[in-house]
Image (cartoon, rainbow, N blue to C red; front, side, top):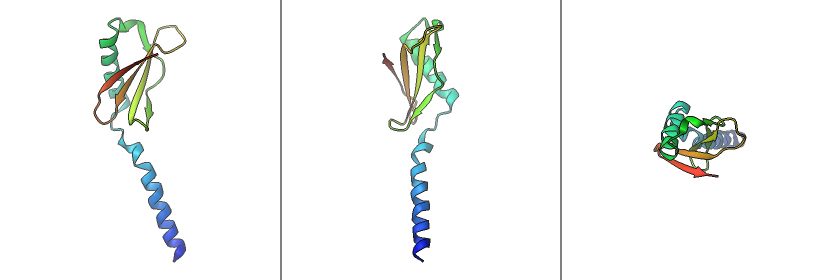
Amino acid sequence: MLSRIASVLCLLFLTACQLPSSQHTLATAEVIRIAEAKARSFRPDIARYEHWLPPQYDARYNSWWVAFRVKHTRYAQFWVRVEAKTGKAYIAVE
């Protein structure tokens, strides 16, 4: 009896731990579209830039991060953060 209760509690705990990761509702393609639109408003010469990494989801902020850099350089020039629930985008400059 006690082992069943422990098993049920473990199952509930594991299920609860997975809930935050399912909160990001935007698809990767949508994240890129929003990030590019925000980047274009920040840098009108966006054709000189490229995505440095694939979009990265950060559960702490429930947001996606997209890095942009000047083509053929090594480091990110700026990042765009896209909130997963609202789709709002913000610029973060290095």
